[in-house]
Length: 333
Ligand code: MEV
Image (cartoon, rainbow, N blue to C red):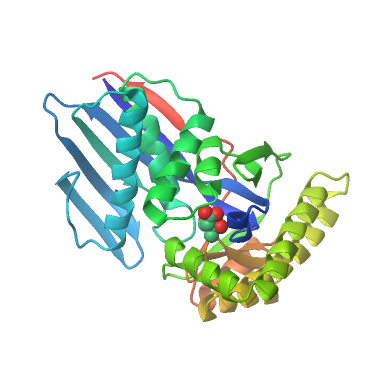
C-alpha cells in the first residue's frame, strides 16, 4: 500500500507574531499544496525524496537521501528537518518503527511566509500515520504539526499547522480554532522573492519584547484588539462592500504595527504601498516577514494591483481560499 497526503499553504490575514504571545489571529488556507507519498520498505531504512521544493532563487531536485543526512541545500535542508521530525513523531504516535520511503513534491515557496514547513509537516504526519495504521483526526495531526514546529523552530503558536490541517477560514487562539463564515476574499499575494526565517524573526521580536516590554506589550495588545475587531466585521451583518472597507483599514493598521515590531523590509513596504496606490483597500505583510510575502485586499482591482506589484519588483499570485485542509488517500499498488 502507498498513502498520498496533501496539505495547503496558508496566509495569515491578521495577527501574526502577536499570536505567539497568546493573542488571537485570523488565517486562511490557500490553493497551493504540498504532496507527500509514503510507502513501507522491506528493510529498516527511511528514505526521503524531495522533488521541486521551491526555494527562492533555487529549485532543488534531489533523491535517494537517507533521513539522517547532512546537507548543504540551505533552505531545502531546513524543510527536510521538518520532514524528519514529522516522521519521528508519527512513528512514536503509532508505536511502530518501520522502514519507509517518503516522497515530497511542493508547490509552496519555502521561506515565503506561506506556511511551507507546516504544510510539509502536516502532510508527512498524515501520510506516515495512515501508512502505519493510525487514524488521526485533522485536529490531532495539527497538534503533532505544532510539536514538529516547536522542535525545529523553538517557538511557534501552532497557527500554521492548524490552518494547513483544517483548511478554510479560521480564527485561532492558544491552540483552539473556530471556523469563520466563508467569504470569497479578492486578494493578491505579493512575493518579495527573498525569504525570511520564521525562527529568527520570532526570536528577534522576543528580544525586543524582553528588552522593551513597556513599548512592545501595548503593540501586541493592540494587535489582539485589532483581530477581535476583524472578527466582529467578518461575522457582522454588514454588506460585503462595507466589510471589505473596514477589513482593509484594519490590514493597514496591522501592517504599521508589524513594521513597528521590526519585521517589515524595504521591499515588503514597497509592495504594500504599490498595492495601496493601485487601489487596494488594505495591504500588509503576511506571515513572519523579513522578506516573504505581503497581501492586498483589492475588490475589483486585483489585476491592477497584481501589475503594480510586478512593477515594484514583486511576484503577484492571485490565490483563492482552500476549503480543504489535509487530504489523505490510500493508493493500491
Ligand atoms: C508565521 O506564519 C506566524 C508567526 O506568528 C509564527 C507563529 O505563529 O508560530 C510569525
